[in-house]
Image 1 (spheres, rainbow, N blue to C red):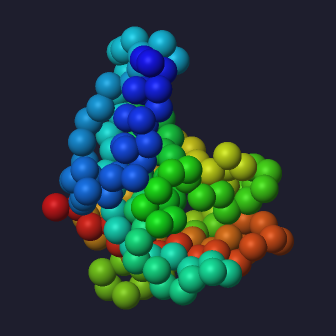
Image 2: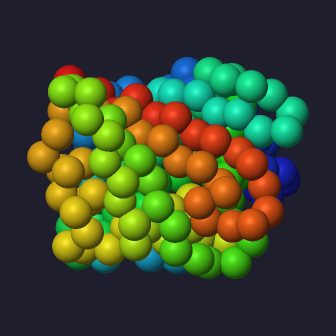
Length: 164
């Protein structure tokens, strides 16, 4: 019975993900281990809106991007199509790619050494110029093309990073 209750709570949490989120504000959270115990480390998390296109839809705004900035270094960006788990994967095996960013002036910059993770999302190492730009900016338009990470797939993700 207890197991069934946990599964039901997980399902409800998955289906109502979007309604519970606080968009465009960084929040600090405590990191826990596999047993739910605090590790003493923290991370900052922000949820952003945007849209995505793939073989089934075009410019669908039922999309969430989650940025997780770890105090111990690095950042993960999860991409949630239809605002649901699991995070979309831009590659079938971990590989490097690039993303494009448009800043307020309208200038477009490309950043490489971004890792597409086979289990979903992107990883940016500490010291990467893109990571420093995210940490120091309040508004960015971020474009991620699956074709920049893999020969397979044509999904495109556009994120509006707008810190309030």
